[in-house]
Image (cartoon, rainbow, N blue to C red; front, side, top):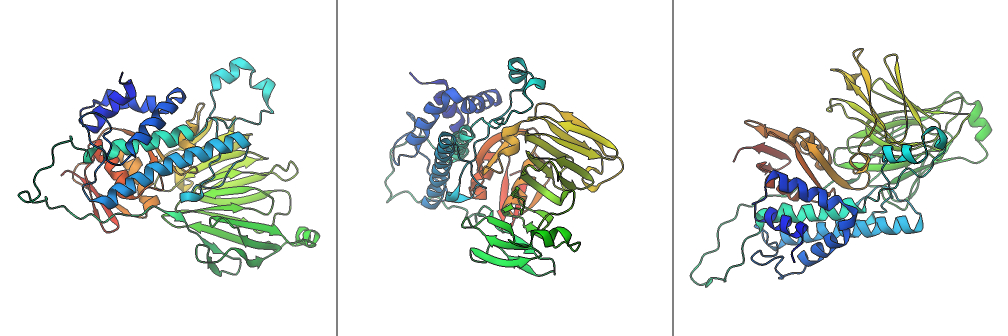
Length: 459
């Protein structure tokens, strides 16, 4: 008997599913109990020449074999990522920033605030350590299926092959694809010298202040080591050396600070920081988006300043999204405790909560800023970028295209009236832009790619 998931996928790929049915399918794909069936359907879809269902052919690209191979590779990438995430959960390891085949998926579990409060109470469980545990493996499998549906616009009913001698192949428009972003960043030293991190080899790359700077074996990691024997000199040295790491559009990078804290930077972001910490506080400045895992030190608290917002922590895991083209700044706590301050207001967050800085000048440090609390933030959506996934949940087209613009380093232009409504979907960030846009096209968004420009508009 055909399952409900299979029925809905068939309707979607034939272009006959209603909005209600598409939303139902997305919910079923994210349910943990459906994981086995989802994986089986993906594996069946990847078998070349085998029909997915009666009357529906396996994906065949309008652009020829190259496109089909990219689609298959992207689905296999999502499955591979899911397996890595599972192994990370089984052996208790956690990984760095996702990037191609080097993914080391960190296991993150989301909060169910009501269940946690009912079970033990926040006040009695302040030292809870493992708040990060809904495996993003579900996201990876669901992303693979959404990708399969995205290419559904290229799926046609199985028909008897016509005589090639009497039928001319249709002419195809050639669309130049745009590759995804990767591990790219520029390091600016205290004297103003710059180092392209994606070009330099692994190992020692510089010494600045009282720190040795090392590019790790993972091509997307930079590590700072306080130089042995100079700790006391560093403590008494008032001339602190500051570095800045900057990711371009289409770039991402991971940084290990001299105190052991870790920072993941998304595309078009930067971090300004001292090469070694001394004094009474560890202070850094952020632009764009970053995920932080701060080493605990009660005698030297950690603070982050971003566009007029100050976040104070002792030792904790959290994400800050503060792009200047976004309407708000979002600080989301995954584990531990933080306090967010802006314009004389302050909020203390518990795991699973989000502080939202709003106002017309929210990302410019304007005096009209104010804070509001989201007590049940969507941690899967917040953490998806770090795990190498686009996770669009009920977003308008402009919000989605801002993410795509930053990651693929493209200009987005709207021709005529902007598409209305909201869209949901998941797909690997390691997927070429054309495949991501095909997913949106299925939702009624029409586009053209012109070199490094994506034009959104009516056909």
